[in-house]
Amino acid sequence: MDLKKMIINSILLAVGAVLHQVVPPVLFGMKPDISLAMLFVILIFNRDYKICVCSGAVAGILAAATSAFPGGQFANIIDRLVTINVMFFLIKPLRDRISSQINIILATAVGTVVSGTTFLSVVLFTVGLSTGFKVLFLSVVLPAAAINTVVGIILFNIISIAVKRGKISHA
Image: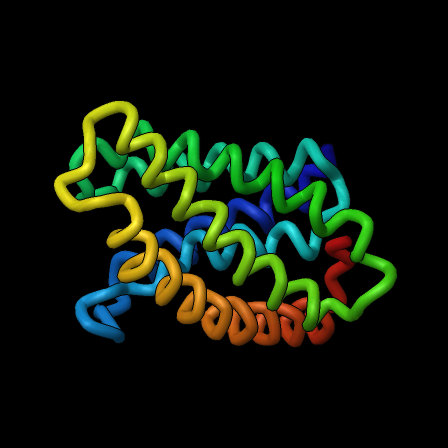
């Protein structure tokens, strides 16, 4: 693994974790999961499976450390690892066929749904849910997917500009 890529990805994950903590709720008390959106930005920038899985593991640990959801610590780690694997193999054949803009839209929209479904499933099977799965899916996961898609596009474009201006070879 390339040390330079790992350092850049670590910085992106740290920025995502910090932004996730400081960004206020934007829609009915719901905060965008910026750390998850940042994980998808890392996925689009990297073609190496090992780097993506390592980033997913670190993102899971950071999300677990800051989770306020009952039983969310274990669920966050499993959720990030499952999500990065599913999305890596879903995006892999599309990388060269469609633009990066479409890839980030697909990654954040579909990836947030995969992440939310995995998270809720793990919590359901480990500690139980106080509200029904379907209710949480419709009221939390789907709106979060819409918000994360917008946030992911914005973050991706900002980081793309910084990478080009800084003449950093990241892919």
